[in-house]
Image (cartoon, rainbow, N blue to C red; front, side, top):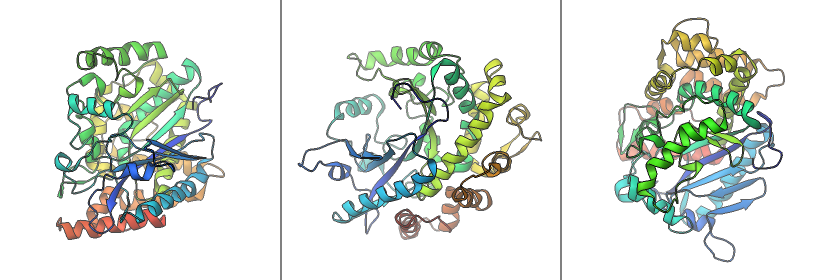
Length: 414
């Protein structure tokens, strides 16, 4: 989204989907992303461009990211496009007795002993992260998410978009949680990735803040209020300034002024691209509804406190759709007709008045979203499938089902 002139708000969308590479038989993680990304001449690469899509790696060598390169590509074409890229990667991995597996956390990986950091280009950056934060743990080395990048042009669009994104972030795990199990045991969180995310940078608290970004009204205010304190705090640990860039920001949504976009980071990877893109479509529909209406104007005049939003994010990360929302002010601002509800009920209301109500809305979004609303998030369905048996054989059975859903483009029914 760095083209000139920049896209206006909602004129495009860039998606990034992260997957873990696992052994085809044992489903243990396999740190071989570099072999997938190796160039035709045998050289190592962190990126592999494939026209409308690209493959890349960040930090952990068992993770591979698939991204859409054209932000103006219609959302309706992306499930098939991402599915095609997944098939290509799986074809490459089949020769190494490996495959891709979806979900936000590998349910029995021990990151302290199994993590292998990316050893090629940018390795010095990852080594510095590891030295400062200790990356061989959940929240760094064991997490996969979808990033939704939404464009803006100028301060006014940025401020409006940032305001409504702050408001939506807390309830996204109620739709997208997919990480209930870690190291072979239930974690007590349906979105354990977000539980780890909140504390992965605790040595430099200003990097993550409250996960919910502070309210700002301009790029200049964002740089002074969010980026500058973070750069100042990291400086003693990074004397050469290697990490002083926008991507150091670890909030749940970060401004990328280098490409005129805001990147949303609180969405767990789902079982197949159709489910991922359906959640992206829901996110965009609700944000646009708020952006175009009074919600954005009110948030700019009188923004909700980040601590209140962070409390709601924690509740939805724990309970997903069953989390109870009793903040009447929040519900009033987002147009819910009562002062309390379950998060799933709020999402049903929001989708009924936006995505489901839109003339010409693509029907492929309805099935994944209605499955989530009726049967629970992927995390809830994983827990149903596992039942009371958290033994390795039981977890492998469920994970093999998930990997099959990914390879076939199917939704996960326990």
